Image (cartoon, rainbow, N blue to C red; front, side, top):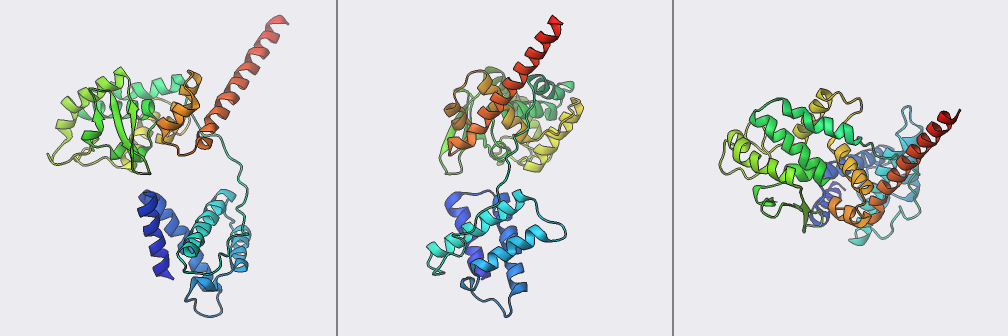
Length: 306
């Protein structure tokens, strides 16, 4: 059974180019499911065809009613992993019947992503300007690239030197499907990248063969965790009350672009969303913000007439 599980994880990585974190989440979720099924089985499990619909429903009840029940969003993720796995087993002819066909995921109330105001973004981008070191120039460039392009943190840390076409003011970022999408950058970010490559990166680099665009203090490719810590530090330095992550800047990029009149289809392309339904949440956020602003204006007008 472990063999089929490992084959499935390899399939996800090969066919869908899922990130290491996504593959690890699948491995963890399916590993917990297998551990539960082995514990519940009257005899040793040797084949996935022995797992039926009732077994899977019992696992869902276990997650809901244990002493510390999982959140509905976590259960939904685990159900999605299990359904994907059994779909794979069925498609490969490894089992005759898919026991997840009638299994529904729990409904999860979608929370609107957290964003920063334009003022908060400006304060964050200005935070590294307090120093003139190679690290400061790298960081201000990083923050501007994240906010102006809306790229995922994994995409930014994966950028190579050849991905920055500064003459054309474009960054090339491979999508999860393999092809590259071309993301335009403005004059300010273009200028920052030029200065970073001329002044800062040579001071950080220790190995001439390293091709990563953004380097850490050891001269190696900057990691996701390293970038997250950089943003967290500057958010604190800027006095921002909300937690700021790389995805906060991605969400802010989308909402601010919409408010300036950029079409939803263009934002979908810039964000690298395969389906526009994923992008539509930002239109909902813009509408909610406009409704809030209108309510505030109405309240102010009524107050002034009293």
